[in-house]
Image (cartoon, rainbow over all chains, first blue to last red; front, side, top):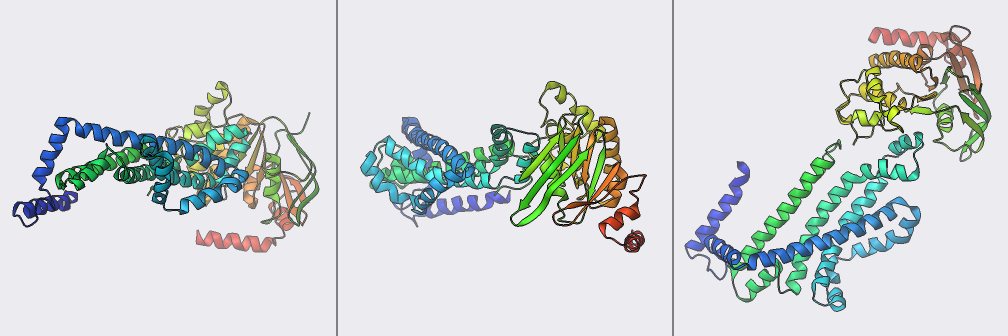
Length: 247
Length: 236
């Protein structure tokens, strides 16, 4: 029960502040206004349209990041040559704050869906890539020896020892990557969008509708929390064997 | 008939350190050989070369039939249940069908569905032993398999191993630094010493490989060992 104390207190304080007129409605909408705005948006279909647009972008960007990270991470983590060839470059790119790519991406790809999905993919890629490479490097050499003692082929060693041993790290990376994907989605939609939750934010700002802004913020929180919970439950189900607590 | 394991002219160096220089060893079928020696004498390296885990610089190593390896640590795959760990090396349905019997043999008949993290050290090592037996190996290679166990588990696992080796009619090469391990399990004892390593002593248990002879070959004065044992006794 104790976990609900702070949220409930915050909502009560918020309602009191707006109801007494201590905070003006153009500065902060009341909880009642936010709920009304949410149901209006839902009834008119705008909510589902924007929510759908955002979720589609996150899903597409995350899927691309996951595939790219699996391919590049496996190559860099699995071979000395791959590491020498790609890792320094990827580490250098990673050192750039990812939002710094925004102007370039907008120039190259315009302001369409491709640009937004690309930005989401860049954000999600690095946590997954880094986790996979360090996961592969961290696999217990002694377990690989057990596989070799049974004369397993290189392919069988990868499939039966390396992949399962790397899985916990990969899932942690994917969870962080998904959080990053939402972060980059906001950035992309704030800059240039005519739909999506980020568009609700800018639209609310331009029309001084704090209720609309707050609806978007609440929806971001819900989406982020839901996707994080989904990833955590996947971790529990798939790598519950691990003898450690994942962060 | 070919021997279970034949090592001819094994030469192996780590950097400048020559561990073996044209080393020979034969292990007959069904024979159980214990290899003793001080830490770093090369006994583990020899076993790893025979297991194919270490690449020999020169020489030939031949083993008869399937080889099973048991390591110092259990090395169970943490994502597989005990049962699936034991079945890991199985290639045929016939070998897979051996798993329940092997679990029973090592006293883990009730633990097949557990994950390794739920096992005690002794249970885990017994599961590792069962895993090494799944192909019904002709040769079992054991690298200090009791080292991580406490005294009681050690005695238990020695007894289990003896039973299993008799049951499986397998040859065994046991690397250990413990004379009691050797006396409990082996038919023949080899003591390695020197650099590069050579056979400093070889003898059969029940024949010339007495505790005193083995200790003398290891360079441990018998009185010291007796003294140590007495101290352990008093402490225990």
